[in-house]
Image 1: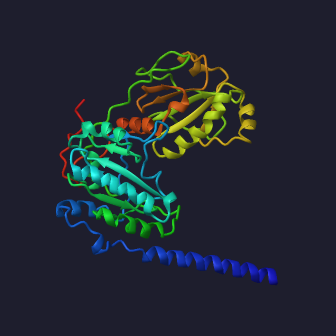
Image 2: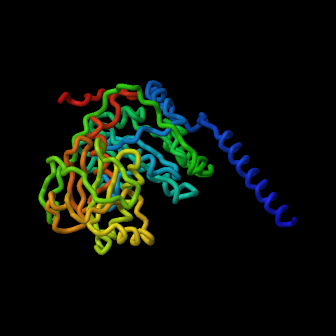
Image 3: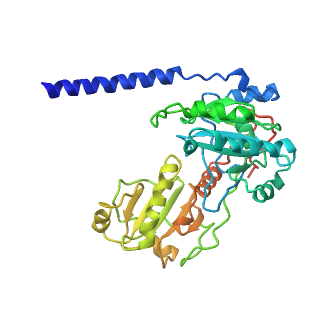
Length: 383
């Protein structure tokens, strides 16, 4: 009876905790204190930015050009930054105010109470964007910067020419817009104090149907395809396997990564965690299939101790491998939905930025253009 009472008490306590968490979520305020607001921001732009409040911003994807603090760092995405408070600050290297604002915003990262769960993303506006990379490298800017060459990135956030900002909470929702730089620390601390619920779904700001998108080209071909024929820009061989280790998947009409690997190959095994990350990040956009030329049971036994979070198949006849002329593994190809090989090489060369650009180009463009901002962006070119 005592055990039963303890279990009942435990259940009640869990329910009460969930109830309190729900009340806390409902009590979250989406209003911004007047003293935080930068009144110098044009009301047209403030109104545009305010339409984002309560929503997740549109993913930048392949739009813009990223300048990253180190070669090992990958371009961030809003979804990957969930769990952190994110300050998105616009700037321009051509004006004293534009240059000073990134220094001031960067200081916020050192002043907040929880330094592990805050991030700063800088957005360089289109004016004089040609000098942005040189400025960032010369001044050792430590935060990732996306250089908006067309205005599409700024339009998705409501940014115009004056430096301004958007604050995103841990859930990925825009909470505050157009703040004074000196108020960023207080605003960030208030968001850092809130709990994070990884299961909470946040809607992305609505995009009108049929909206035109910014033109995004497919990436340049890889210069190192390893020991195989270079089939980039050509039709991929018909997808064929002997048997599936995972649940089968139809790859036709989908953007897909096909990786050729084996359980006995150390570089292949080493690349699995990376491919798991790519599969997780792009689960709604692409299909990944790892194809081994080994017997099915060999791969089944291997997977008992190694988690592969993407589709896996075997083809001992090596039909696709032979057509591509692959002499060394691991080797991967990325194929657009109509069947053209858009990239080829070692799977560790498959970055998030590369995949996002292929996904964007495949769907006909990147960010929606001329949405809430004032920059005039050219639509996707015909043909």
